[in-house]
Length: 369
Ligand SMILES: Nc1nc(=O)c2c([nH]1)NC[C@@H]1CN(c3ccc(C(=O)N[C@@H](CCC(=O)O)C(=O)O)cc3)C=[N+]21
Image 1 (cartoon, helix red, strand yellow):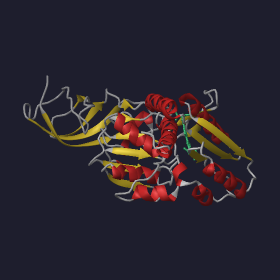
Image 2 (tube, rainbow, N blue to C red):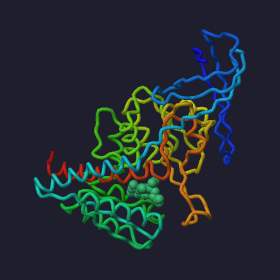
Image 3 (cartoon, rainbow, N blue to C red):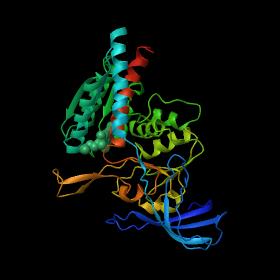
Image 4 (spheres, protein in one colour):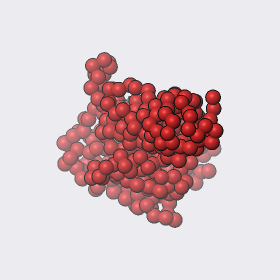
């Protein structure tokens, strides 16, 4: 039996125990019905909470008052935003452009990567970036410095790459050893080659209306690109960014604002962060806290972009650990309309955007359209 139901508001209570794999969510619905005002005992109901693309929620039990606690089985999980696939598409697009440029003007883009110290994760990221460059036809130049090298040595190399016309992008892998001044080093990269978009002049332009940065930081740019490629509207939406780092949170908030979202930033000193995230149509989380964002932090139908890549111990995994996001996927994917997985979400997009920025730089230098 179908009934026409008007929902005036919805409050969701999720079971938040981290080990729980329960598939139901308790829900307080305030509703009126046109056909069966007082007598509904059991019915199926389909409604789109905030995104009509992802409508199906089945209510399997309810009692007969107009504001009633009922059981909702969310049979439709959120759309999985497949960053790995989108990143592959982008790499293919970049590769096509690179071969066209090579054919027409004989120029091949070049990316220089500077790695200081021997952090294992940094070495892995740099290796992955080099591999990605190879697949699209970007020349990559890698320089490694020992942990105890001086700031001057690194600065000298940056200056060499600044002057080298075959290098179109310079990336200094972060974090740097603590004895180095990150600010001095990032300022030394000339803005025309700042493919990470970390130079204060690029960030400053990003923050100003009517100005254009030469490059947008790769991770936040990748987040927005995912929203675009999944046709998720941003204009006029409420967006909440969790985290205010220079490399992700802050530029992500600026980008969302440039896309006409109304943006709030939640950070470590925010009181009751979940009250703010619950208002969001779009959440971008970049804090590095495994499973911090629980199902009950999320408004039904919200879109979730998870930047966190957190290793957690897992004896069953061959590496001894597995990667999880900032968002508790298990819980949140039952409430959201779309969500990025970890791994396979934002991570691969970061690298794809780096390749795209390097191509952009070479095109700009050689006035190639
Ligand atoms: N100057 C600078 N620029 C950066 O862009 C930069 C940096 N420093 N320092 C470190 C962070 C981190 N980062 C990642 C890139 C790709 C993945 C990635 O592809 N991750 C895979 C998982 C890889 C795995 O399984 O280990 C995924 O999420 O699917 C992750 C993290 C770039 N960073």
